[in-house]
Image 1 (tube, rainbow, N blue to C red):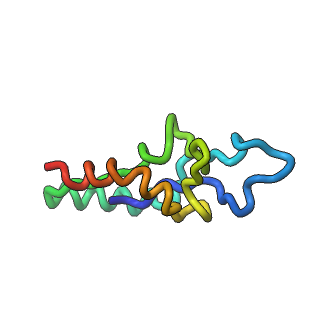
Image 2 (cartoon, rainbow, N blue to C red; image 1 turned 135 degrees about the vertical axis):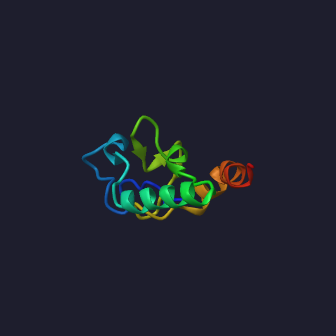
Length: 97
């Protein structure tokens, strides 16, 4: 299971001068090398690499908030509430044969 793609830091992104759309980023490239290595090793060893980007982003845009739920509390670490919301997808992805 790779790292989440990250988004804007809610501790600094929202201001009186911007809108929620200003707290949407493209997927961060911070973990690109790590994800590529994970995918290569998975292919070489016959295990499945899971990319969680679809649980966080749509059309290469990654919001910090969905509805009234913050996804991250610091731009990189997910909130407990978002973890609970995506738990069924995580379980399904990790337990599928």
